[in-house]
Length: 118
Image 1 (cartoon, rainbow, N blue to C red):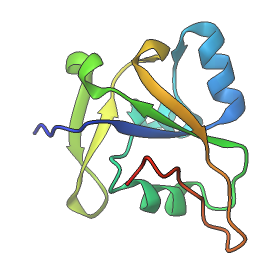
Image 2: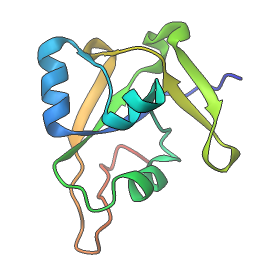
Image 3: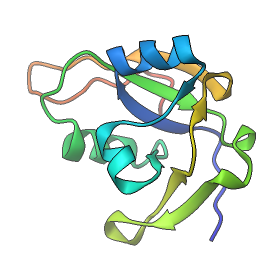
Image 4: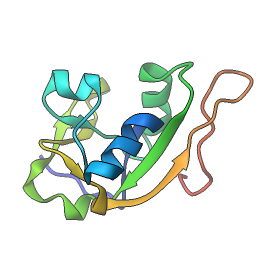
């Protein structure tokens, strides 16, 4: 199954992303390495992903990625609630990144997403 997206998103700890920038590629979080692929979300899925997997975590970045640069290593697979989620089988080259933004936490504990993520 294949879906198209303008951008896909990765929520990432700042320290892990800084390491990836130095190395030229992001190899995945602990959960990604355990599952065998890098988890991404679409803009619509992003807030639920943050609430479910990143609740209360600070010093996070939101990373926007151009899915068209990832080739056939990007698979759209059924996951939470039957939705198709983008999964990358292999490292994420930093050259595929469109932009990064901090992902701060509001007083109510939810993450604050940048305006450019509708």
